[in-house]
Image (cartoon, rainbow, N blue to C red; front, side, top):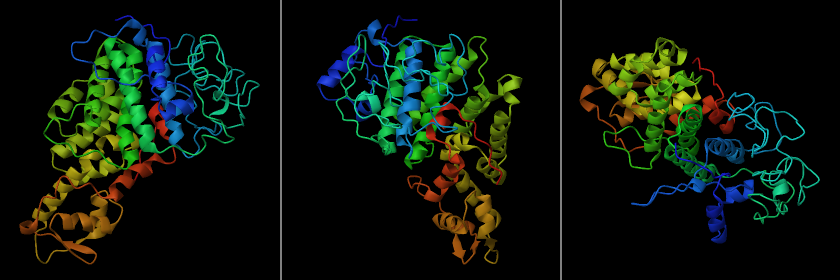
Amino acid sequence: MRAARCPGMCPERERCERQGQARLHRLEVATGAAVKEWRRPAAGSEAAAPDQLRPPDVLLRTVRHLVARVVPRAEPRAGVGAEPGDEVGAWAGVGAEPGDEVGAAPGDEVGAWAGVGAEPRAGVGAEPGDEVGAWTGAEPRAGVGAEPGDEVGTWAGVRDEPGDEVGAWVKAAAEPGAGVLPEPWPLVHDFVMDRLRSVRQDMVSQRLGGRPAATILEHSLRFLLCGQLWLGRPPPSPRPRHSQPGSVEAQVRECFSRLLAAYSQGRDVYENQAEFQALALLYDLDSDQALHHALQLPSHIKDSPEMRTALGINRALTEGNYVRCLRAVRSLPFVESCAVYRHIASLQHRLLRAFSHGYSCCNCRYPLQALAEILAVDTGDTAADLCRRHGQQVNGDSVCFQKSSYVEPDPDIQPAPELLELVTIKQRGRTRSSIIQGCKMPSINR
């Protein structure tokens, strides 16, 4: 493992350079902490210096900061109070054990927020070297007008302390209530995706493995899988061509590859292994390679509820039972639905092609409402639109299937917005941050 000695979320040289060029992101100014950017390595360049690489504990702190402090800024109530289930709660169910890298350890730059209630130092005190500083509550050092719930709070105008990494470079005035209005999700999404990519870049440079690497990759995957659905731009259907370098699909595949490799090394027990093995199988639905990997897993993983569901969907698809396949897909929890979403249109195409051949008769009428249930859509109008796109004739509340008129739809046409709503409704009011941290979502019985 290459030595890494950068003490903060952003190397000092990069922070000063971007500050001097006025290139600090507005989310970095708002949260009071610069985070290292992802940069493409130059051809023939030397390996990163140790003071430019963040060690494992700093990488984990960076992920915590992005998930618990930046992602919530796109929520309607970003950072206003700590409610039950709020995203600033327990970090993916990890307790604060002594020496736990994920928990709240002494000297934690983000403060003791992991599952901590109203502790005296719950991220409030501005200690020397405290990267995030006094951002909560109205403390005596609360700089400029720190009101309860004021997210910017003490950051504006805070005096430089010895070793304070951020110091007084935040020049924005902290108006009462500043930072309460949510940021646009596209802005937050692009920023977090870039910074998580930078975290993984440092992780790979150090050949980091084990639990720290698994934690980073698991949170990256939940963010990448769900982020596009929250953008309202569903991922494109899988194509035979290779994904473009740097695309979301390429990043998802890289994360899955490294995470599954981390699971297979050593003797550590990973509590989320069954979940992510199932997500990998659902993401590459109908892939012989993915199915072969899943069948080689230990029995205790294959027999988990998540893997049994994923293997059942693969089996139904292999048998051509698209009705059972779509019914199972419709009942999946939120994150699993995000992973399999890009395959839903293909499953619907296959089902309608089978129906156009099996029910091809000029005197046969199939009820649209029954077809909507089978196609995993909510309304007969959506089912009628899908039938028309496949060249089938819709008459009133029924469809007349004709084999001769069946057409394959244009693969570049985006799925109907109603299909996206079928997934987003499964979020059930949970915050984006809590889902990325690993909030368990129940299955949907529909």
